[in-house]
Image (cartoon, rainbow, N blue to C red; front, side):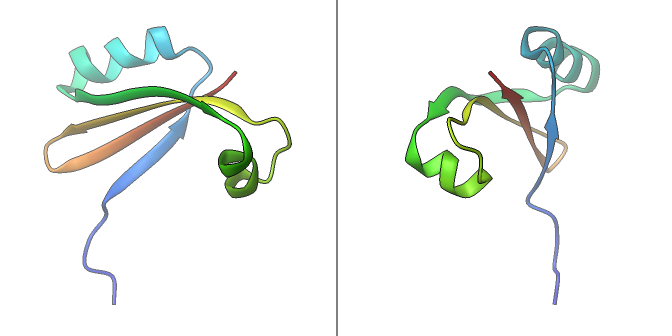
Length: 70
C-alpha cells in the first residue's frame, strides 16, 4: 500500500537557473548539492560514464531532487 510520496525528481538542463526558480519562487530550501560519478551512478542509471549533479530540496512537506547530467 502506498502511504505517501517521499520526493519527486526532475532532470534540468541548467542547475544555476533551476535552484533559484524552486528556492525563490516556491520556497524550497537546498539540503544538499553534490556532483557524483563512478561505478554506483553508472550501475543505477545504466549509463557508462555517468557524471551528474544532484540537488536535494525540501518545502511544504515535499522533497525535490534536481538532476543535471554533466
